[in-house]
Image (tube, rainbow, N blue to C red; front, top):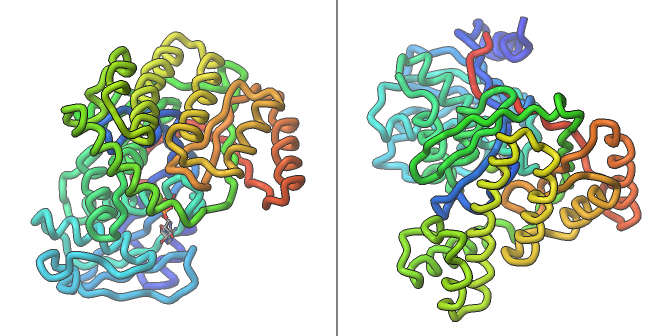
Amino acid sequence: MNRTAQEFRDLYGRPPEGVWAAPGRVNLIGEHTDYNDGFALPFALPQRTEVAAARRTDRRLGLHSADVPSGVVTLDLTDLDPDRTPRGPAGWTAYPAGVVWALLEAGLPVGGVDLHVRSDVPAGAGLSSSAALEVATALALTELYGIPLRGPELAALARRAENAYVGVPCGVMDQTASACATEGHALRLDTRSLEQRHIPFDCAASGLRLLVLDTRVKHDLADGAYAERRTSCHRAADALGLPALRDLPYADLPEALSRLADPIGRRRVRHVVTENERVRRVEEELRAGRLRAVGPLLTEGHASLRDDYEVSCPELDLAVATANAAGAYGARMTGGGFGGSALALIDADAETEITRAVVGAFTAAGFTPPHVSRAVPSAGAGRIV
Ligand code: ADP
Ligand code: MG
């Protein structure tokens, strides 16, 4: 029997009605573009969050996670009334409770439910364990209550939970990747129109591999810096008379930069516009089957995030520089920055050597060694039991 289902049975004294799973994600390219209506190219990881669930006859919610040491937390659905409770409590239960809250806010017929969560997506590593938890919960609840929300709509609901109830102003990329990605493909997402393109991305067939180098650090700057970057992008778009920075074509960048007085604003704009262009070029290389040519674009993206957007940190810079010096085709930080993970595109044969080089460099610098894993483009969310 599925372990998550077994644990549900032990906890609640009855079997679950099903088990649903949603993956973490990495973003290949297109960072800090989603709140500028731009483009991103994430894919789903094999690591996933499982939610075993069964409906209750009362209007209560039982919440438990194998990954958090505490008993079952019980909430009442009336305490999740969006008219009375605009914002959730701190802590992990806000994520699943937020999904119920968002369903109620949308006027959808959700009732009581017991949930048990188990995940192998590392939390806080920039691999979107939060989106995996929201999407798996949303899928469980909508299927159990016969609510026909799937794919992009499910992602939008999960994002609403994180934005409004948990209070994290994330874009829609993470939840979309978790809900909609397909195995062996990267998902090219237009965050304005929500158009999706599934682009074949098979590293193994080309003798390549993608490594995730999880630095295991999260610097305190992250939240404030994220809000500041959003504001400066929106301000620059206003100054340029554009709805969003997405509307600034790459070819017009030099002229637009000459119209911006603020040197910091100019650099932020340059990152966003060149990053959207890199998404376009990476898509082009993938479609042409030139996977190695993606490498230099990753490294270019990292330099832009480090120098123009100023969201990297010494650990991420060291991971990228060392992987490249040891023979990677390219590497970049992935996720919001100030810690979390870097991604490196390498020859499959070079994995041991590059891993050793990065771990050695971290040890020499006095950093905690990174956790290294392989990233294989995997399926999006679904029911597993
Ligand atoms: P990321 O999404 O990059 O992993 P976040 O800070 O956005 O980092 O989300 C991590 C938070 O999500 C955790 O601190 C926890 O509250 C919640 N979370 C994620 N996975 C689980 C899980 N398996 N069980 C309980 N809570 C989880
Ligand atoms: Mg998150």
